[in-house]
Image 1 (cartoon, helix red, strand yellow):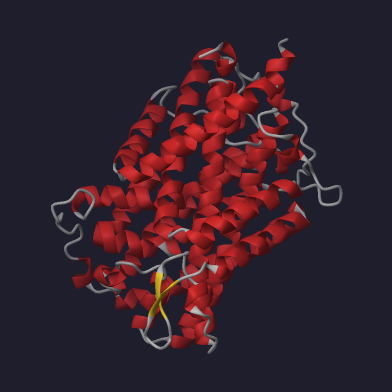
Image 2 (cartoon, rainbow, N blue to C red; image 1 turned 135 degrees about the vertical axis):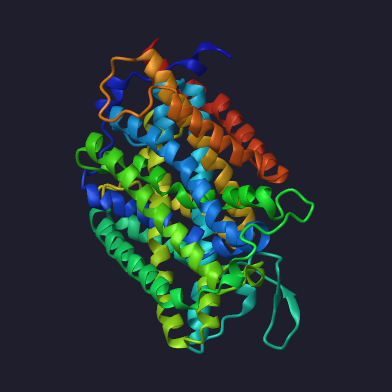
Length: 481
């Protein structure tokens, strides 16, 4: 590869970068951003699919495995965030540690990760929204409630092909409008929604605890069917891969460095705080779900919470919780779309994407054009693709980002040992990063071939864009000429 591919951005330059964004997010707003994104579709939707298809009651163990892998990566994120208080997450960290080409790869990967994850969550929200309307006696045409071409049943019992997932498109554009209004107001709304979501989770857990049945938890790890990934240990690992995207929330926090007050202190604290809170919630809540309802009943269930509450015959409580979950999903989509725009803004500021992505609205000081482009792509994906494909694409993209961040910690410890670090990963420069690479790599290897092919195709497309545009327009390259 030619030298520009490996050219790094000086850390000192990241300390003086001006984006025009307003620094309005404090520590608790950042933690709310992380928890708000992390506690969402992975809990309210993918828990049932992961248990029914892959792990059985051991889905709780899958969440633990994913959390441990995330903890290693989270510690590495915290160290780099304390060194490099610039937005852009793993993209910026790779740029300072490994070079422009690697930064482009991870930035392109993050674009996939955030956009597809927003689509995944929107598709899941659609199911809860339809259930909520159904409880109110409003019945939407099923052809508007599933991805394009999916078989759906009409009220008269006939099977037809779905047109597109209309509610998913609606919620993406509604949250985009909220983001475009301004970060300060929208972040306060997000904090309120996160508090509501935690109240819902606590309420459901308290109501369901007396109904947990030991027979639903035995065997805890169902025997493998003879096919890799279908129950057994391999099933637990595959479920961990499927739900890994659920933990993307702490990654989102690091994209908001330039929206935050005192980022070198608050970003590391909020990364680790949101990860710990979310992991505890996931493990307790998933255990309750598989304890109340047999995992076999959730084979293709995108709304396991509704299924659980329905089995308890508490229709009024189910309606209230479904309404709360529908609102709760807004905080997830909010964080993902916000993170996506900040990645694009950082890449555009470096010259790797067109200036359109860094243009801010005069009134709100938010990147309107980036928000609109992201909303178009995310709504198309949510409208047309099945949720399991979207979830797997997000997970593998997230895992790749985590691995590169772990590598970045080791490389910067060697290349810039004297740089100021507000937080250091425990155990020296190699222990935690290597454990992070091994654990994230193990989850990646458990994922299916088609998911790998989609990732490779996306990265190849990205390299084409870089070679045709970013390589020649890079600001740091021209500053050396």
